[in-house]
Length: 470
Image (cartoon, rainbow, N blue to C red):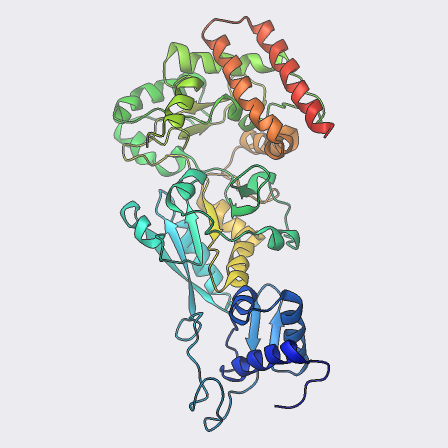
């Protein structure tokens, strides 16, 4: 090996080890990820980065941004002895030898076929490493995501599905990828999913919403229920009453009262994000709808009931919400615009899904996994999503023609009116419980409407002031 200028001692030894690894690989073979090299050679990032830059300058490796590091030097002569032995080859512990595919596991749910289209289109673009798609049934989840099994990519129907089946700390943090990510279309703020409000991003939601109406139209057909494109509240409630016996063995669940404000585009804070206005004339149509659903028709539990079931630890998926979305009316504050809570299916799965795609912490192809996520979030991937599901894509400016303008406007308002403050502030997140309990008191007739509005305004503005003064 020729002398390497400027490297001495441990740095020279590190260079020799990485050099031996590189020359033992066929051209085009990816090196293991940097975190593997650091662990294997007990090296710091700065020292390892210097060695890799030298090897790149010598023309022995190619470093491709967001793709990986690849050997470009021809393999060592078969008669050359090195750390791999007489043959000049080594056993590759990160499984690039004999493995040309990265795996993507999709927890099966209604409508998950969209992932087949996304993977097929992505593989057709000749990426460095193609993806192998597997749909996983509930009964096989533990074997796939058990203690001794690693994965590259995984898709879960919801946040709680993910947390229920994954052991702690086995998801890759994506913050460093996101910081340099510049998509063609701006994305909705909700797309990045965190285990904690201020924690690292460990999941991406490339769909804003998927609905029961999109994937379970068979339920409506069996009951001879017909709904107009934008049904009136009377139609919706009638359909729910006809359907509820089909779900009699299930627990009725919902996302809580707060979610209605966001989904219907009702602002919680002003444009500056520093003051909340809870006006009676704005929220009265929504509160009337909640009263009819929860009190008159009894199609939804009270919020406290869901909190109680969830906190008891019972496996009823009570906060793993199921909801049928029915946008109606021509204005966001129109009384004919609402969302109806629906029960979970008998096996605990949900009619509503916001699938999360995650990268396994121990994958040897993190850059390639992120490359697929970037594709899913790109204009190409989002158009496939828009054509396939009855939900708004994560990219703001890609609007499928089959969605009504009311829903599109509502989803835009979710982002522009208060959602960011709510998602990123732990104090406002804690305020959710107070707001929902106050609304429940009004639903039960324990508080007049005027007092409800004043109390929510006062309490939330104290939270906002506290947050802004930090």
